[in-house]
Amino acid sequence: MQIDQIRTFFIELQDNICDAIANEGKEHVISDDWKKDSKQTLAGNGRTRIIEKGNIIERGGVNFSDVKGMSLPSSATATRDELKGLPFRALGISLVFHPLNPYVPTVHMNLRFFCAGDIGEFTNQTIWWFGGGIDLTPYYLFEKDACHFHKECKKSLDNFSTSYYPKFKKACDEYFYLRHRNETRGIGGIFFDDFNELGFDRSFELVKRVGNSFLPAYLPIVQRRKRLEWGQREKKFQEYRRGRYVEFNLVYDRGTLFGLQSGGRIESILMSMPPVANWSYAFKPREGTPESKLYRHLKPFDWINFEKDSTA
Amino acid sequence: MQIDQIRTFFIELQDNICDAIANEGKEHVISDDWKKDSKQTLAGNGRTRIIEKGNIIERGGVNFSDVKGMSLPSSATATRDELKGLPFRALGISLVFHPLNPYVPTVHMNLRFFCAGDIGEFTNQTIWWFGGGIDLTPYYLFEKDACHFHKECKKSLDNFSTSYYPKFKKACDEYFYLRHRNETRGIGGIFFDDFNELGFDRSFELVKRVGNSFLPAYLPIVQRRKRLEWGQREKKFQEYRRGRYVEFNLVYDRGTLFGLQSGGRIESILMSMPPVANWSYAFKPREGTPESKLYRHLKPFDWINFEKDSTA
Image 1 (spheres, rainbow over the protein chains, first blue to last red):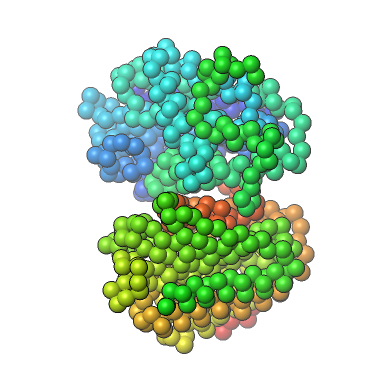
Image 2 (image 1 turned 90 degrees about the vertical axis):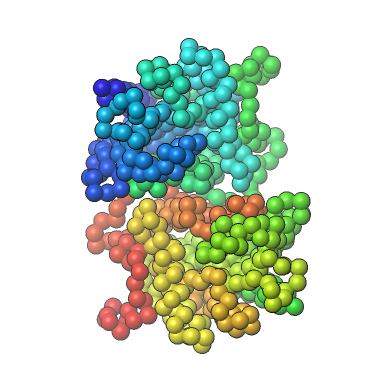
């Protein structure tokens, strides 16, 4: 059955990613299997795999969940109001890694499958869609890393249609945007939702390609930056910028709001929170500093064609 | 004119409170006057007074603002949907102090005056109301402090009606509640909104009494606890609990959402954020520790009659 295939893929992907990241920093990964019974608003099961106080990852992890609910909350679909209130099933893998070293960027990926209406069996009548994306949030900007990340994102989509990367890249810039700060969360990546236009098999294939692009997109950046020396200044700045991550996730993120609205498992949902964040009144980096360089890139930017146009 | 009186009262209260707190810790208070012009969604002026890295206050301050807008946002009134979209004027004073010492509680007060509809002149046709409250968020619970705080809140209201304290106390417990954590934010206080039932003069008088009760309610607690010794353990716990403060303010707080929705001045709105917060997966204090004592009190509790019932 198709939903079982998705489940199997997500669980294997969770393990692959955790193993690779753990291997990179000799990290200890905690596994926390959980189950919520059906008397609650949201019933289901999942596995949260988490790293705290690691050598590379200060806090982060990968969450797998497979839940059912009686009434689809408003945050679950961006565009299709008519689905609200229907019974649904949602399978998802979600990850955030907040590295210790401020020169290593924070990364986020989410892949999800929803079906609504007739969820007992997967039939031609079942309404279903995939959603997901990957995006990168650096503290210190390296053009090389940003280009590499976007190229890997593009590669995972070009096989299906070359129209997807520009479309999903734009959606990512629009989604990961802090209106109250007039800043993007980071340097973007790709984002898609309500996706079923290729039919089930090819849509699932696309999601698999995106999932499998995570390690090639992120790991080389970790390897390149993990040994850079940092001090108090870089750490404070990283913690300050992590405050923006908190602001985005709690004010705007539909995945987080979906979890809170639907009575999800709070420690798994808030796994995305950084280990430490700080706030400072009206802070602005001084012109010409590496910190100010980041701010110049917190807006939509064409990272694919960047190297062609520049000698940097 | 009545609105000028409110403005004068709020500005004087801001200065009194800042001076008293600054005096307590020999703090340096920054004053930041600001103005937003009328081309923006929200026009007005204000003064943010802020303390950062103080001896007593690690971060916090008092914000005064006087703004006008063309369209009242949904977060501005809890119960009166018919006012949404009307032109409005809002005057408010809002404060949060996050102390350095984990034994000193965080405190919050907000007092606000709204008028909507015909705001050019204050006439019998103008729709107006006051709102506000004070509440306390300890990290280590001292019954004596909680009782004192609630008694001062009660005292400020009893002159008007003895029905107010129980009503406003209940509203505070209900408002400062993190549904996703099943916890109150702290040990409560008082909270009221859409308040005009005593007519303008007596309603304003009540707001003045509440505002003037801030220092007698909070300062003795600061004085009692500011010299208690603390270490790494207490600091980590304080920073962890401050994460809840962040969660509440960004997910639930109507004042914060009003500011974000109406295009308010972001650094003044997010003055309420703690200097540093941390998150840790599935943290629970061990039974019998001072940290676990706090958790037993993160629910509605009768602090006025506490001492009578207990020998503690």
